Image (cartoon, rainbow, N blue to C red; front, top):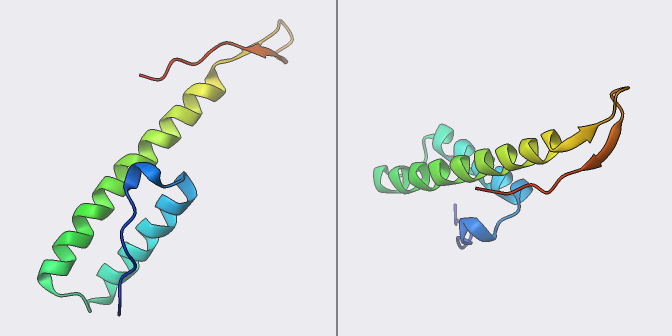
Amino acid sequence: METPPEIAIDDLSFEDALKELERIVGRLESGDATLDESIRLYERGDRLRVRCAERLDAAQARIEAIRLDAEGKPQGTRPFAAG
C-alpha cells in the first residue's frame, strides 16, 4: 500500500488532520506495516492527535467567549486571545 505524501500538520484543517489520523490508525491496526513504518506512523499520528486537540480547545474557548445577557441569550462576543 502506497502512502500519500505527508503534508505539514500545521497546514491541515481539523477535518483533514482527523481523516489522516483515522487512516493511520487503520493502517496500524491492519498489522501490515513494517516496524519502522509503524513507528513513523505512530509518531505522526501522535502529532496529529495533539494538533486536533489544540484546535478543539481553541474552538471551545471561542464558544465560551460568547457573552450572554441576563436571559441567557447570546449578546455578542469578546475577542478570543489564543495562547
